Image (tube, rainbow, N blue to C red; front, side, top):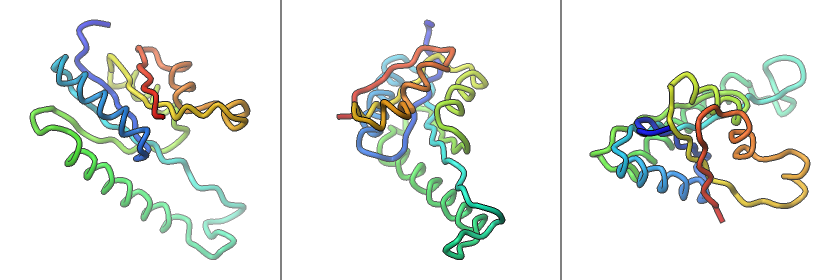
Amino acid sequence: MLPVKKIIATTDFSEPALKGIKAAVELAQTLDANLLIVHVTQPLQTIGGATTMAGYHLPTVEKEINSEVAQLADQLIEKEIPKSLHSEARILRGKPASEIADLAEKEDADLIVIASRGDAGWKQALFGSVAEGVVRHAECPVLTIPGS
């Protein structure tokens, strides 16, 4: 595990995720590690064809979402990541937990930092959480930061 040279920090651009990003920045600075900020978008679902029931053209909507996410990632890096820290953003598409775990393996990451929302209600009991999925699937250590 040591030395830690590459840290993946996940975000969904929420307040809890920002706590995770801040913890990852502090770790990266302390350990002189590179920081990879990751957001995963999930494919939009429709029934048959590229046009939704509301009349939206799905490829156009997904392109707009990707553009917005890229802007949010750039703003996050500009606002929260010190210039002295080597960082980059990656936007992935798919199931968040498996995409994050797969990226960590491909990038030979030493650590994943992810915020947990702390939901303990029926949604987590039925569906689990992204943080829990990452912990289950990642081959490197995962640090969960309480988001609440």
